[in-house]
Length: 309
Ligand SMILES: C[S@@+](CC[C@H](N)C(=O)[O-])C[C@H]1O[C@@H](n2cnc3c(N)ncnc32)[C@H](O)[C@@H]1O
Image 1: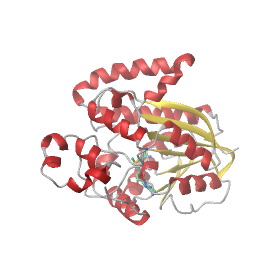
Image 2: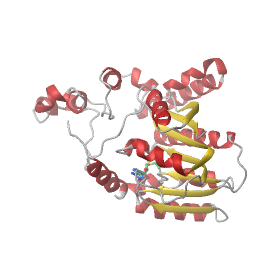
Image 3: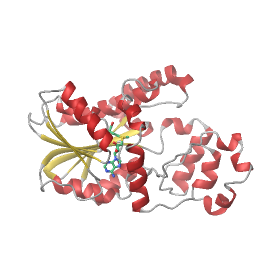
Image 4: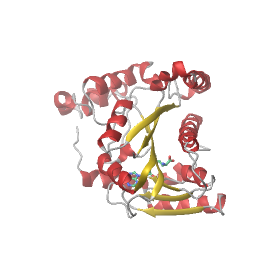
């Protein structure tokens, strides 16, 4: 069980997002495996729903923290808003600038590179909306990031967060993800685990007991390693639940207003993709009904709308 420090995490995240992987991520909303395409587009759709609900006038200022290849910023910019962004990846910065210039030449896009855990180079009370989608789990200090977001947001402005969560439907339907969720719940794990028995025993808090055997033959059998991944970059992904996301917003002075879910699936396995689509449509329709809205808790991704009051 490896411990992380701020420096190590930032170096690993920056290394990962400046690696050649970025080129692949540039295409993730259109061309990656259909499962990823569907979940990312659902997430984007939900973020845009919250943007649209706010009915801001054209020219309103929006900041995206961790804009990646610019797909979310582009869609918001196409609504006539002025888009600003900060991302740690220089490679992504170039890709995002090119995408937005190419696909929305009339838009106003100002992308910077920088660490969103540090002081943001904007005046107090600048933005109408701040969006951060699929980013917070890479941070060492998410409180520091949201405190800065609070400072640069106008009073009455809104923060939209989209994050993968710990207790999605698919976690209850297969053994390894289910055991991971049990550890998340009972041991209050701070970081996501790979869905492998090795990770369950060695990378969780159980690592205090089993960690010393992680290099043993037994923990490196095919069975124990199924679902495991080996990262060249030693980054840890923070774990969120709906409860943790709301608590994070409240700790940093935001008032959570609404939560919604994006993408319901039974399994990440490609062979279930067609079935996933049916499940997703079913839960989507169910959660749209007021009485059944609570089913959003089973979605893979939670989208939270908060306000600086
Ligand atoms: C999964 S991508 C999400 C990109 C985009 N928000 C989207 O929805 O497609 C995560 C992004 O967070 C950025 N990121 C991670 N840690 C960061 C940090 N400390 N400061 C700035 N950006 C960071 C990465 O460079 C990457 O672009």
